[in-house]
Amino acid sequence: MRSYFHCSTAKFRRRRSAVLILVGSVCAEAAVITFIVLFLSSLGSDRAAAGTLTRNMLLTAGLFVVLGLAVCFLTAFSADKKSERHSRYTFLDIQLKAAVISVYSGEMKILGQNAVFRELYLVPFSDLRSAEPCANGRKFVIRGKIRRYGMESEFLGYHVRGGDIEFDRMWLNVGGFRELESAVIPAYFGNPAKVCASLTEAKKRFDEMPDPRKRRENAAKPAPKRRVSRPIKRSLPDNPDFSRTWK
Image (tube, rainbow, N blue to C red; front, side):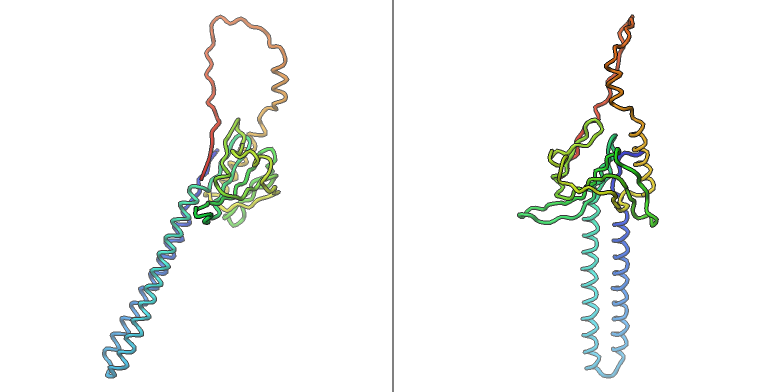
């Protein structure tokens, strides 16, 4: 079972390549047509009309080339920017008791500084009912009690403590969210079927965890004494606590 899914940016690269190929082919066709018209006009007897046609064709071809280069530049810039932002801010983090789905949603200038916005979904496994891919294979649906946050990225930093999710801004643990019965997530993380399988497996493991109340009852009972002839070396488990913060 995978516990962390990065955003797959392959579709942004494919989109950029498709637009560049399409615009480049249109510009090339415009240049070829212009060359043919200029060649044919040079064979004509009316020099004045040929000169006017030549100027018009050159202006038209130049306009096509300029617009094509502008579209190519803007497409490449947008695709690279989206790829970089989604790689940083779009992820799926599966922990012991909950999962976090973060999606980059845009940015804007606020007081002269660039502010990045995210949509973050907190999915407690205690309330998760199902996770299924959509029929078109481009999205997946999660059902249960889901908390949806939408705000600046710097407010949505969180840390993991004992397998549970706790926000660095304590007020987000009790408010600042909208509770949903279901959420449709675009397939930013590769194959939606694999993502749903990991969420289902994590839910299954959560349900199989022993009840902490029974554990406390067993701990309250006096344990039988036994004689130990030699000291037993026990290795402590790794500390699962860590922090995830983005600005």
